[in-house]
Structure formats: structure tokens, C-alpha cells
Amino acid sequence: MLRISAVFCLLLAVSAATPREYPIKHVVVLMMENRSYDHMLGWMKKGGKYGNPVVDGLTGNECNLKDPSRPWLGRICVSHSAPDNSVYDPNHSYVQTTERIFSCLYNVNATQPNNSTSPCVNHASIDGNPNMGGFVMSAKTNNQSGETEMSAQRPSDVPIITTLANEFT
Image 1 (tube, one colour):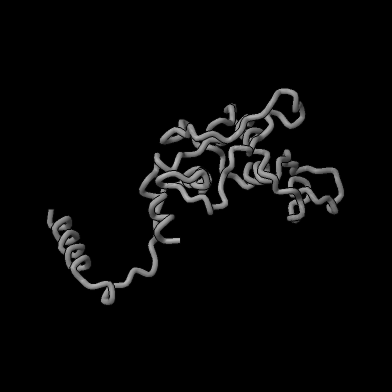
Image 2 (image 1 turned 90 degrees about the vertical axis):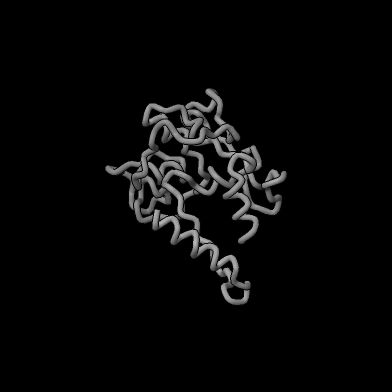
């Protein structure tokens, strides 16, 4: 209880001070992992009470093929139906991240020459096409559908973080 009282008194003292005495220069928001920019703030571009149409965000046209080797199976597009928390933890390895960004299967034992532009073959290359098309493919290697990876929160679902983004950017 003493800690809470001390924090409360400190907050009162700071809030009673004039802006000149304690100007806010930076706001830092600490978040748990698995909350990427797109997941939390991607739909801000749509506007609305908490949105911001000038944000370079999701349009609703961003999609991943369900299986890049069989495009006729269709695709999964971004949605605003993200759950509050994921029921599983997506793989965060270098390999899976590279596959997500460059939409390719990572090949540690590549037989192609090192002059390939694919970062999934030539591990020193950064010339590949970062089309973000591998999120569903990567999820499927972990026996998931990819729908969680392709979903994001509406600005009205996360009003505190969207308000902070609007006020301090």
C-alpha cells in the first residue's frame, strides 16, 4: 500500500506542476511480445474515432496465398477480427521470419550458387522481394491456418494505444 500511495502522490505532484516545469518530450509504451505494429495499429488508416487516415496502414487488400505452390487454393486476406490474445505462439526464428517477409522456403542446404538474390538461399542477400507473402505459409508449417497472422485489431478495440499513437506522433 505504501508503494501505491507514493506513486499516487508523485503523480499528483507532477500533474499539479505547470507544463513548463515538466514538459513531456517522449512517451514510451512497453508491450508484451507478439503485438506488432500492424496487429495493434494497422487498421488506423480506416479512420473513425480512434483512427488516422494519414497513417500508412492496412487497406484490406493485403493477402497471402494459402499455398504459394498451389495458388488455386485461394488466399487469406487481412481482417479486423484479431483475438485479444493468440491461442498459440508463432515461431520467431530467423528462418521463419525470413520466410514470412520474402515468401520463400528457407533452404539451409541450398545447392544454388551464392549469387542467388533470395535470402532463403543466399543467406547474405538482402535483394529478395520483401512482399510479406509468407505469413500463411509459415503458419501452416506450424499446423496453423494463418488466419491469426493475417488479423489485426480495430482502432476502437485498442483505444488507449491508438490515442497515444495519434497524440504523440
